[in-house]
Amino acid sequence: MNDFGDFLYTLRKEKGMTQAQLADLLGVTNKAVSKWETGEAMPETSLLLPLSRILGVTVDELLDGKRSISNDYNNQDFKYETTSEENNSKEFDFDDIKKHIFTKGKEDEKSVLESVCGVVCASVFFLGLISYLLIGAIWNLWSPYWVIIPICTLSCGIIGIIFDLSNAQKRKRKKERGENPYIGAICGALMLACSLTYLILGVIFSLWHPYWIIIVIGSFLCAIIGSIGGIISNKNNRN
Image (cartoon, rainbow, N blue to C red):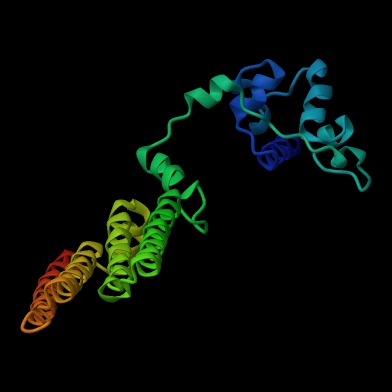
């Protein structure tokens, strides 16, 4: 490249344009722009003014191949905008689509799925609390209907696990940390279900004993599932 070509290439990159985009603005071919940048040819005189305006320099600076100390054109902020046809021609892969559905395109914000999960869990807990207060206040059935509160709380835990498993971004982050999202979710749901079952049996049927064994069995199954999941994860990491 010569000075003109080097300078043209630098200015084009600063504006974030491709050779084809610059050529389209000037009404020439991208091959012509390529020749200008490599020094094989120079643009026609009639193109120098529009070219300088697009790139935010004067014609003299463009021909000199460098910016002058004082440049009023530097205050101009030209930005190439793609046309609707160019936008339609862009291809988005499925991962990009999922990212915008689940995270709105921003990693540091709550996803839509997480927001929905929060609303569902809050609604379940709020309805449970209102139901308990109404039953207690109207019919004076404070006991054993206190069980509504822990049942709603445990149900929210299960709902949260289900939503987490449906969130591809969360699954991906857990896998990157070396965690198995499925094993953790299964164990969590199992223990919540066991606790829920034990509470219902105890309060409604007064079967607190010997049905405490349900919790022990749930813990034992979680230990087995966790061990199996650890073995599978280690094999996958080695592969």
